[in-house]
Length: 504
Image (cartoon, rainbow, N blue to C red; front, side, top):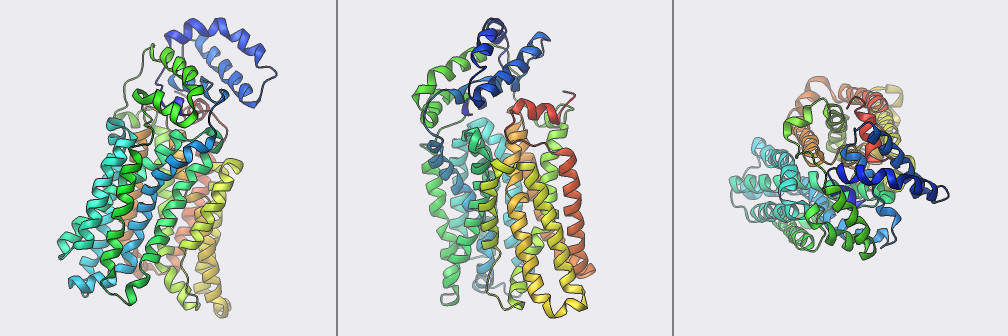
């Protein structure tokens, strides 16, 4: 799996050796394992394309037999996935920490009556995240994944420190802006890095771990806010705590494998054992002798070759945000309180993400998305009815809670974790980092717009109409996913690319 990331193309060497080796490989693989059967299929695809002189980068990536060579177990990657997920934890923590702290920091900074400045403290994080998400891909291409993580730890730590020590609203906003840039970068490179180091057989489960740790970060922020009632200046400690995982992220990435070709031998040995080094490096050397495509530019993302697959990535995040998750989060506290329940939706999100992790490599990404958006549409309809049908008035509180929990569970089952996992799989290696940055930029821009105008829309149209609108968006998402998203479970990168761009 890791070796695939290090290759751009291999024409000349493959052309000279493929024909003579094909017959022997075909006969030897006729009674082999499932991995060998898949390799045989890929060899046949490439051979047919070779006869037409149309071999591509993705063909070569999927041909390498790295998984057939004995080596370390898949568990070897787990510590490095854990280090990367510190970024996801910080993502969730910075999103959630302001909810409990805002009231107390507003008093401390003297802006209790100024809701505009309070809004800037909240939204400045989203503005910074938009900038960070667009720059994360370019930084990852230029400096490598691990070095980008280390650089990203700087705004994460400095931003947290400024927030914790702020004596003015200006310092607070600057600190939130820097922290936002940090989480914007992590939102782009955490799923990218995890997908590149993960073995194919557990890539789905490990990819959904990103969403799991975001939920853990939100829960950690809620727990960190518990002492606020007895200690009003505790909000400074809440922000300061996040400096620690930022430093740990930088230190952990210093010993994590880099997924660029210049560090191929070291990374392969670290992740999969020295037994695979010779075989994989032989293939890498042979592949690198051919001509290679240049690194993709931003405008290449909108070319006819990549336009469709890039639009799928952006659309998934648009549907994710405009399906109403922000509205449910905003109103969840009042919904639970009206029913006499002291709870929070983060626990529901955590449960849903754990379930999604176990199903990702069994049910597939596309089916989980369809199931998720369908459940969200039904839940939104239930929420709307609980506020409007007089016959349901005696049960409105219970129905609202059930609808909220069902919505969050449905969201966490697919619409939450799947887009970040799916993007590194559907994007060709040449455009992967920049395409993910563009998609995450769409996510943060839509997040910012929703946060800016949501309350105004509710005041003008009412929460019931807004919930019905969200339900409609979820239904449209089901139709879009059914017609445009391909299933990536158990499929090679070449098959995915061909399915999304049949004319390329």
